[in-house]
Length: 265
Length: 230
Image (cartoon, rainbow over all chains, first blue to last red; front, side):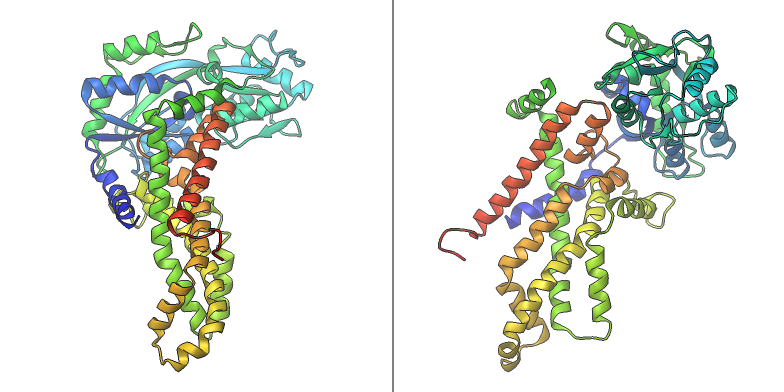
């Protein structure tokens, strides 16, 4: 036994040292839960011999990881927060990669009649008026920030017993909504890939206000010299390539397209 | 229940991803248990045989720390190992070593506290003998640790049990990175987040089975709990 233990300790200590050419990237839960990353990562490895370690967190935390220099690049979806991040000098630049859309899901009997509303703001007003339970991410993620913008646009301060802030990632929040049979705000990719839909149904889509842009930001090597900016740029080149365009545009779940590539070149 | 069978299928077909996760779980936890035992067992024994002014307070703090909230330990280790933190230069965040560090902090008080209680009782029994033999302080500690090894095994196994099932701290400091820091507990949390309850449950049963097997193996190797042995 003793020998094995020593080997195990040695192996643990060596585990990090032996990983050459690895990039750490913080990505949003919605990007990861869509399943797109599982398709892209092996292609990235095959094409440019780069291992991408994904830290899956909310956009708020992803930005803080970049700020602290704990990752080499981030892939997030909250424009205003990204601009702040760049203005503070934490990142070198931001590059649009792709977009999808946010959606409202809720109980299939749709008591608040969200399906027949004309805009995202009207949908929220319908939910607030009917006091139907609504589950919010409540975790400072990109989806949460977007939801708050929409409430503000609808001129509603969401509070009261019907408004529940889960304080969790996208999957956990969908689980809560499914358990309570409540309305919630999510992105199309996470919804399609979610395995515990219960009685929930897709109720409202299509307002331009629900546009969801994903952007890639390399962490500033001037602030953190250890950051692998060379690898971050290598990955950016790949993510904006024709190969990536084809793969991202062709990615479907149940025959539905999830993302649209829109990197400028 | 399809996900449930999916999990068993992965075990039976020796799925490399699943075994990688299981192996890393064991690697991290066993490393943490060894390090925590090397610190905790002598610390418990030392506290049992020494009398000093603050002893009562040290022991009270140690007992309280048995219940350290893992998520707070995780946050603490995270802040220490972050590039912006005091130990950031080592670049250890999101590595298995960071997970071992967090687990050592969580289980050392547990191992030290249980071993202290065991050794204290043994010390009451051995006190006169060891004093009359004129044993030095370190000889006393060694003798007590050796003769109490069965009970101390329980302390170590309790540490193992707490570490192998821990998720809050290692999720924060490890980051649940596939092929790098994903272990059974964080994989279960991930599958639960995806709404794949049956698959998560299957992984959960793997985790429980693993804990039972390890405990059984330790008992067989150390020849405890056999018939005719008390």
